[in-house]
Length: 157
Image (tube, rainbow, N blue to C red; front, side, top):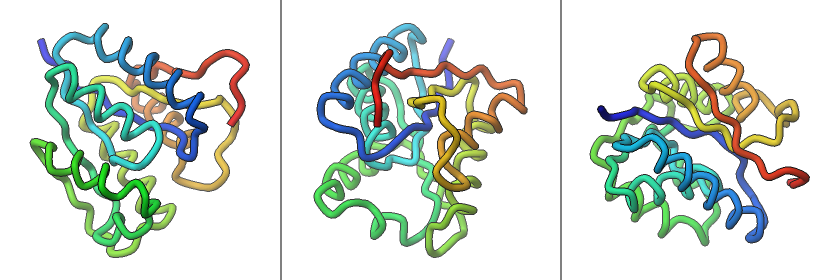
């Protein structure tokens, strides 16, 4: 059986924290066996997850919040984004032109709605703005979608 697994999580992680998150995500992906990963492909948790799914032989679904989404990603990350996007078996492009909190929340909802479970790379704190990790976790829980929170004990972002 294939599990449709979505990701939400923080961006701007330190290299050390990202390495630990990578180990946690790879373990979670392995536990789920055959996986279709659903991701917005942002830098940070999304990208780590997407690469872990691909490395495990899974398929990737990219949910893009807006047509100009790539322009808002860090310039140094864009080549990684391009590579992940090229490997996606399916791309869902939302109708927004410029990404904003509403577009990010809509993308988060779309990922949850298309998934069996959600991995959340989340420190458990309230969001820094609407449409972030905390809001996507709350939405998943409100829909009865199982959420697995991945965060190293004692880590701070």
